Amino acid sequence: MSTYLSSPLTTGTGYKLIKLGESAMHYAEEILVKLEIKPRYFNVLAAIAENPDFSQKELSTLLGIDPNIMVGIIDGLEKTELARRRRSTTDRRKYVLEITSTGQSLLEKGLQALKEGEEKYFATLSSHEKETLDKLCTQLLVAQSEH
Amino acid sequence: MSTYLSSPLTTGTGYKLIKLGESAMHYAEEILVKLEIKPRYFNVLAAIAENPDFSQKELSTLLGIDPNIMVGIIDGLEKTELARRRRSTTDRRKYVLEITSTGQSLLEKGLQALKEGEEKYFATLSSHEKETLDKLCTQLLVAQSEH
DNA sequence: TATTGTTATACTCTATAACTATA
DNA sequence: TATAGTTATAGAGTATAACAATA
Image 1 (cartoon, rainbow over the protein chains, first blue to last red):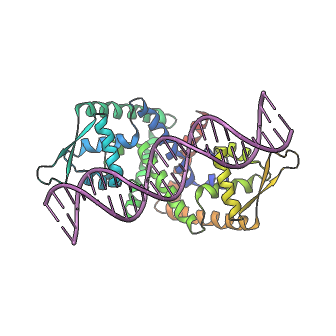
Image 2 (tube, rainbow over the protein chains, first blue to last red):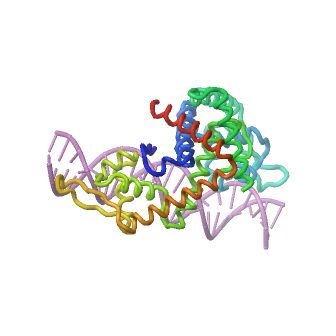
Image 3 (cartoon, each protein chain N blue to C red):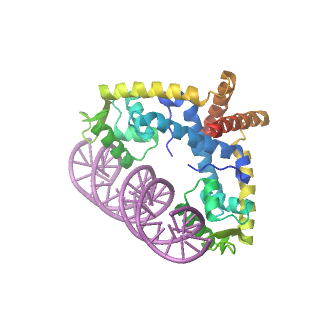
């Protein structure tokens, strides 16, 4: 949203990362809106596909999304028939989540669209520069995860 | 908030920028909370200091913050006596905004704290790497502003 | 007793539109 | 008629706590 032109803050690299993060998120939203899904929901859908038979609790922990918020997200994915809940046969408190064929199809389209979007987003960088940026980002994220 | 460990999305550089932006914002919040001010309010305060006698409308346009939201922000800055409104003498519809000495002092402390925070945040990068990252970020932001 | 999923509540942030006072 | 600032309202998003069913 906010597009600052100049300020004492803008000089910092941290500030630039914040602005770039916002713009990248905005860009992802624009891409996914064509598939009528929000990034949050798309990420959960991708996590379901990647982790078959995960419970809501396990998904919540994996994605760092609060369980009570996860309820609404799964509700949405069920309503649009992208994923579904089944009661676990071994522990009837749990739900087991699975992606539907509709969900799988949307997931593949979304991943492809995001991949193409990424190429446009970074078009101004050479492939060497893009690689360097990716490496530095990874380095920072790894350092943080070790916190 | 959400800390994804792995997902088809995590492979993209765009995704990493989103995560880094979130973490940098979180870090800035942690630094500024010691001064009892939120990044949003701090940014407006900095803009007031940088642009003496700007009206709320001009500030809104500059920062990309909706005028009705700016009202609450300026209210907050007035209540904490960091800034104040004066009616413009030339156009009595307008307010002229000015930073107080308390605000100036907090601004300086905040900028210093953010500067030190930035050094810690990027401590894992060499000064050459940090410079490279900054250059690439700027390059992307400039490309976008030309959109 | 503890855990999974759910609901209720409240609080923040934001977006839209209508209002007032000035021009 | 248009503009600066304000207020009202409603919609997301999220955080906390309490709850039912099951272990």
